[in-house]
Image (tube, rainbow, N blue to C red; front, side):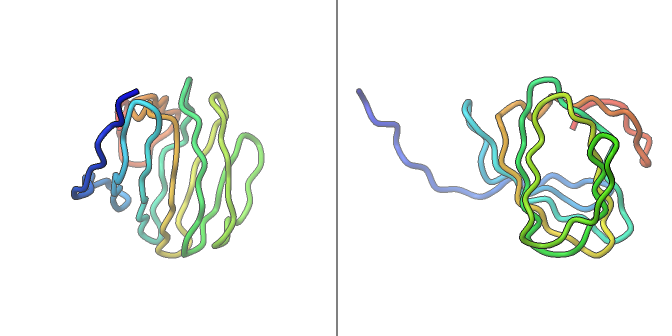
Length: 121
């Protein structure tokens, strides 16, 4: 079996109305992002049909909605979200999230969005 070569490069920066995403990995098997969310901003109420994501709150403090539950998300805590679960995050402070997921980054069903976005990333 031939070994795939290692790579070195720069992350992709994706600006968002709530802050930005830093994409540090996107392969056919997995994806890795850092989400930087500014205080007072909210991500879409959303779900995924295929994508499974796990997130670690590295810093800050957030209000997390997961289906019918709402809780305060604190640094060091991990949330795993299998496909089909409705979720949203609101930054109570400037917050940094480390996300790893399956590679389907376009798999996004927005249910509500403060910024008027309907589809896509």
